[in-house]
Image 1 (cartoon, one colour):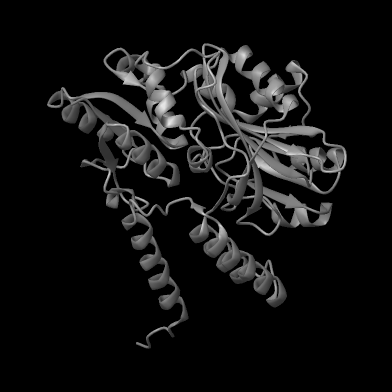
Image 2: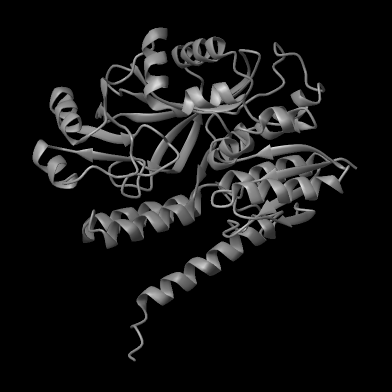
Length: 399
C-alpha cells in the first residue's frame, strides 16, 4: 500500500492524519522534539524520528534521503507547517520530480510570506487593506508609526519569526512605542507598521488548482488566546461565504496562479461590513479542523487532485456546512494563564475568560484535537497541562 509521509507536528497535523487515514492512506509521521502528541494518534501507522530541520537542515535532508532510499511505498510528502514548507522550498524541484510534494510552488510561498511584497501586491490588485509602512531602523519605525497614527500594529516583515514572542504588537501611543524599542531588534531586518483595525476576523480556507478556486469555506473567529484579539483562534464558527471575500480570494489566486491549500484572513467592520485584507497563509491553517468537521476535507481534496482522482472544479462535491462551531480548549487555558501571568487582565477579566472557556469546552461539539474515535492525543495533552499547572502552583524546593 502506498504511504504518505507527513512532516511537521501541529494542531492541523491531527486533521491531516485523521482525514487521510480514514480514507485508506497509510500514514508515516516524521517527528522530532515536541510532537504536539500527534504520534499518539491511532491513525499513525509508523513514526520516523528525524533531526530538527530548523537547526540541522542539511542533517535532516541527509536522513530523509537515507530513509526514502529504502521506502518505495512512500509516494507522497506533505509538509504541514510554515517551517516545513520553507524547509522544502530550496529542494522543491528535487523532491517534486521524484514524488508528490504537496505544497505551493516556492515563488507563491515567497510572495505570501514576505509581508511588504504581499502588501504591495494587494494594493496593485485593488483589495482594501489597512494603511501600512515599512521600517528598517528605529528612526524610520517611529516616523512610520507617527505618520500612520495610533493605535498601530507593529509586526515582522518575515512571518517566520516572532516579535517579543508574538506575531504582532499593538501600541496605543508614541511614548509606549519608544519605550518598547530602546534598541532595534538585532535579528530583524524590517518591520511593518500598520493602522490598527478592531474588527471581526474572518478566515477563508480554500484549495485552488492552476489559479482557480476549487473548494472554499469561511470561518468567523469568535475568540482568540490574546485579550486584545490578536493571536491564535480558540473559538470559531463556519458562516456562509461572503461574495466580496470570494472575489478578493479569486483575484489573488488567479494572479498568483495558485495551486494548493491556503487560508486568507480578513478583518470585517461590523458597522459597514467592509473587508480589510490581513494575510494569506500558503498552507493548511491551524483551524482547518473546523472546515473538515463541516464537510470541507481539505487534506483529502489536496491529495485527490495530486492523484488526478478528484471531481471537476465546477462540481459541488465539497460542501462546507454553515453554523458548525469549534473550540481549542487547551489553547484557551494556556492563553488565560499567560494573560494572568503578564497581568494583561485582572481578577474580573480572568473570571469572565474562565467562564467563556468552560462554556465553550462543554457546549461546543467540535474540538481542535478531541475525537472520540482517536482520544489519546487529547488525553495526553490534558495530562501534560495538568502536570504543568501543578508544578506552577507547588512552592519551589529549597536547597
